[in-house]
Length: 370
Image 1 (cartoon, rainbow, N blue to C red):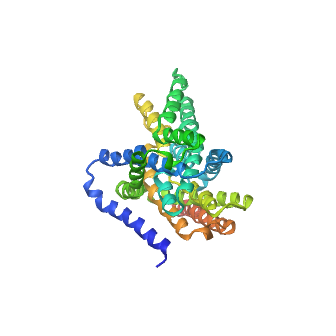
Image 2 (image 1 turned 60 degrees about the vertical axis):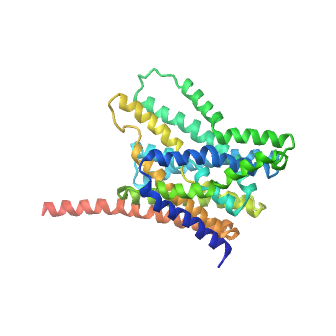
Image 3 (image 1 turned 180 degrees about the vertical axis):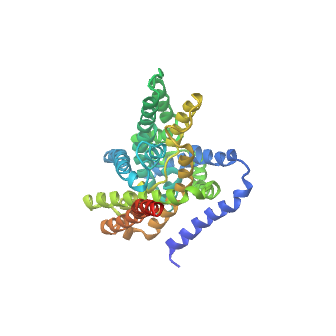
């Protein structure tokens, strides 16, 4: 059997074990505890190892800029295309999805698979790119959420400067970003993993080793689809994946001289699951609404939570498929064809429903008149 396929089956088996463990997880707090271990311990250790095992060059500063450009581009495409999915502008669902879809959470969906298939250098590049995504999800989306809030409640006299300052402090205090700063400092003075004391190397390596199994177990444990929204969210995830493939294909056609590892990174990093941070901003605005005894005028928190839950396994399996295929999955023509096909499949059903509905209404009117 193909080695890549065997690896894929092994990773899927870990997700299946997580599904089997779901009945043992009695509360949300238990699952959140596992998530905290991943984001605050295992993921930072993995990134620290990856950075100190690779050569980081000054030109890699372009990676966070490219990630931020991708976020903004996908945001603009969603603004244009969501109405064609039957989600009207100006509705809570539209604002919610406009916050969620362009965000990325590579730590829970992309980094573990990159580490297994592409090694430490690809994870290091992805970690640097994630800095641009963090600026988008932590700062830009928060300012957008508060702008919508003040549009609905213009009499509010609450300064956002203190909250923006708190978000910047959150960005600085996040374990992943602290690790990035230390790792880049060590690299700037010429230190790599071998230069660290042996006991510290052992600790970091042992913590990093738990990253992939914990993430895949967490995916199996946390997925809780609500079937009423499954069709709509499934179509939106398909649209998101298709648009992302098209963007990656265009980028790779502009920069054809990339190494195979860099090309795969350019395809799989944008396919990361949606981030939790937009939901945190949505929940904060919902809390402000609740104080005024007004519910869900700006956002739909339930939709945001379900979107996160379904995005994680969808993105993980899709990234796993791309990494299993390998270099052939990075051909711009193949990416363009697959992207157009996925976008068409996502847009066709809601467009057909919009065409059929007026016809059905006219038929009903004719029947009533007769």
